[in-house]
Length: 162
Image (cartoon, rainbow, N blue to C red; front, top):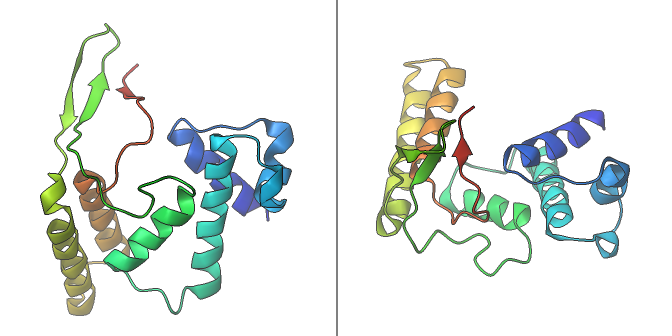
């Protein structure tokens, strides 16, 4: 139970989503009518995605459908939840001196699905061929996924370097 709490809270904090420490138990394990704001909805949504992964791991496959389902669970009640981005958006880094620059360019919206499908197929091929450790293959896929950046940014927060 502690790992579910820690994962839901910490993973959301990375994205700038936080909730009052006194509300963690209610948000993660209570009913949905007790949620106060968008941040609490996102933490609860993350817990729902973890539930799906833990309860149906043998049935889940790495696919566009699974990725979109997880996104819709993590970002409930948002108009484009589970849908790929419609607008381009690079990842911007803000430096300690206040200047900024493009950290990396994300994949254009019209290329998201095909690029993500190619990354999935590449990951599956590497696993089948036993060319590298599954852990290394997963890390490489994760990097590809982050660079593709298939979903719209919810927050206007930018990556800050200290």
